[in-house]
Length: 207
Image 1 (cartoon, rainbow, N blue to C red):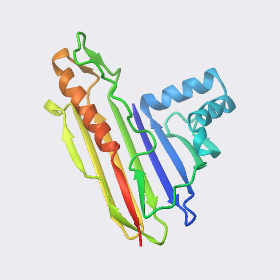
Image 2 (image 1 turned 90 degrees about the vertical axis):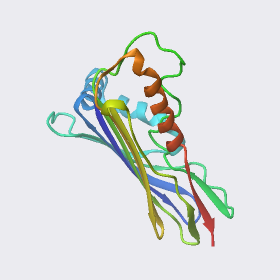
Image 3 (image 1 turned 60 degrees about the vertical axis):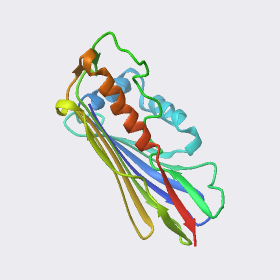
Image 4 (image 1 turned 120 degrees about the vertical axis):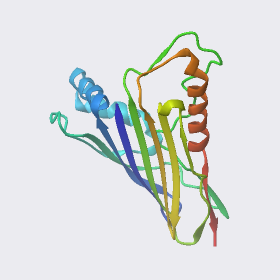
């Protein structure tokens, strides 16, 4: 299972936010989407996707390579936030605002049965922020690179900036499908780390 979100976000001079999203699906992720499209239709699928992001005013939906099984399935659209950023001396932006983990999928303190993901999975989020003139980048999120024991998984989070651009990337790679009960605590803490780093903020300061 492999997905990649490539997101471009522009903060305009009036502090309205607009941008575009491309989601690339490969392997089992692509199979799941194609299977859903067979059971419904493109219009119903798009309406369902719009409902998930109704606060972003999505437009210009496109789906590519539905029938080309050897190619990457691609979903793309443009968006505009309905609520502009409040004008202030400092602006706080969520580093990851699309596709992030908001809650840990492993909430319980104790696990009594093995964990199965069904298949290995790879999830990438790449976000490019364009910052308006009149603001400087005060701080960006901390970076991290951690592995599960025995190289069962990897989480890498990076943040870069120059001039009026900030680039954030989040990369999760789970190399195996099944985890034993004895690995549960480590897996749970792994996802806690992902949540904490994805929840970091970019701080902009007015000049």
